[in-house]
Picture (cartoon, rainbow, N blue to C red):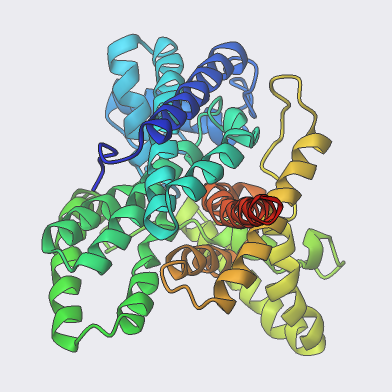
Length: 419
């Protein structure tokens, strides 16, 4: 399943070169730019990266899981990233642990590329998979994200692993694979909560593959039990701290409220709301304000809001790369142009694959669609589409492979005609 022993020698060599280059460039980037690419300040703790670092410091110093305020327990974020950073800090120190975590991300990047190859091979073939890997190798955003102390790299790694295991599990109807998938699903959810609804993708594939109701129930129960075991410590902690069942986070307030502003611009229709005594109360007040805006102004301008909550937000999600600080001397404009090329290749491939009724491709299409839809109620931007971009590279690699195959066939026909 994870082996490449049966691959031709040139495929193994090509993949090894891609993996080696990808790791070396990522490692170079994290060591050269890591200390320069903080998005926030250690004086103000005004962005996600420094807040995650402070969260890890507080965890190892006092055993408290916090985010916005040092003296207040949080459910604003999932615990996965904080605990991972804290693990490295325990071994290498508070600042050495940050560097070690970035180096760890370089290894995760290499692992992600390997899973990307496996996904491409499973759905298409080894040659198309290698082309997809090359497209991802040239996607400079990868080397920027590895320098950051954010959820992107670790979540992308777990997502690609989950997608590959899911494909194998659904195709082979293997209980062990479903069990492993439940573990990876749980771990991914501890990093980013949006993946909790991922089984919707699997349910659609079960229907397409004509699973029986008995099979659906059997695998649902198995994966849910495993997922629950992974999530149980988080649920218990939340109940002890807040005396209520909080399955994921209570962090949708501000992103949800921000999402009600068309094009994220002040429309002069500000809804006042009071800050609560705790972050949870403030979150609920922001949700209420956002719901009021939708009910009131959505009725006044229904077409405008329907467009915004479909095409408008999707454009913000995919229209630009997650590339906020230049690395390797490559400009934002250059990366943006390449980003658009990859998207265009993905769209062309998607059209071709739908015309050919390739069912295996639906795993990637449905996963991409899932992430598009799951973020529409909230503030959407390029950061949220980044973990899916490697799969877009894989899809785009298919059309390049088809072009190369057709050229080879034409060249062979011309040679036979001349002879």
